[in-house]
Image (cartoon, rainbow, N blue to C red; front, side, top):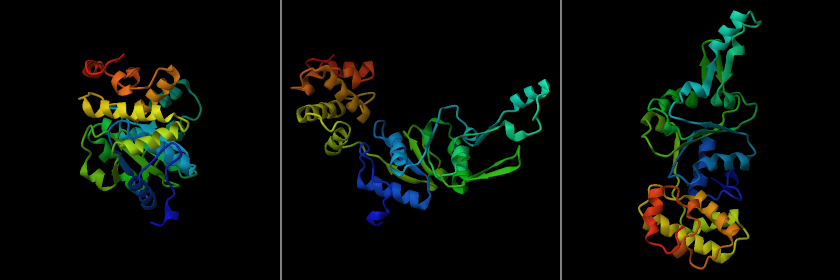
Length: 276
């Protein structure tokens, strides 16, 4: 792709590497859903927000839970409300469309302008969930039998799907997606990310915080390793606290912003001087 073909280059606060930039732009050109994997804190959800912001498009978020069904993203037929209206003698009961409510995919397909559709944490649902969306995401349409109506995407959305790799996704689903694994940022990229959020940060604070952060991540066996968002919150807390930052790796103050599990605090408690 030529340089002028890159519609998305990241934003001031969302820093991406060249590989991710190439992948997301090609997926957009090919009109393919982009499946993004990576450990928590690598910016999977934020990617969709950044794409929408950079391209000036509406963001529609479908957050998946363990009880979510594919049908929920298409439409819901409120048969109970229709029955209730019928019993009360309310007008309009014969108009079935009044009782059809579009889900997040339905909203994206009927949008008058192209939008960004985020299907967040798809691996939280049951194993059949991805397969149940194959036709709709591949053909960009779905059928509503209650109204004998086919909903086709007016402007096919940019679809970004995230997964924390809690479950393996079906091969048939994977074949229809572009794929990118977001590696955890190295120290150099993390400096760029920190500077993007705190452009006026003191060099000493940034270097000390990043050094301590990677020490905690790499040296200890943790249940939940701190991610980028924890580092940014920790830096903000340190700035507000006014505490000295001469040796953050040794002292590790305000660890409640870095370590969110009791077991992890215990794992590092005996190895640092001022853990609190």
